[in-house]
Image: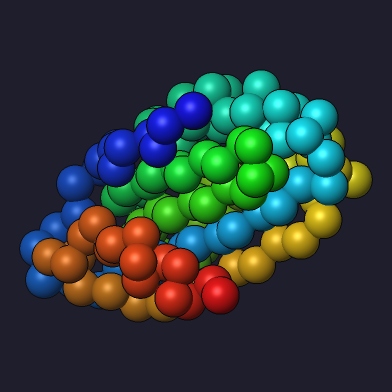
Length: 126
């Protein structure tokens, strides 16, 4: 699966600080990676309609069993509401046994600096 391009569900206002969230997941097995991929479309649809979502992208390296996410939010509360609602919550709980490693990072960014580069995401997560 190629990288899902930066998608902007809601345009952020200019010159405001937004909440960027990135994650890196590594599954235990290739089967776990396939399960992750199978759940991606429904979660991606949820992101595209999420209140407070200013952008999102996913980089999948299924044969390395590694997945990177990048998203920008109006606030930490908007991200939390997304994570605990819709298909994301059940998908995350359903995949937890498949995970070998997970890393997370969050930081503020000016809205005019979106999207953040994958190089910056990697730097913050490794």
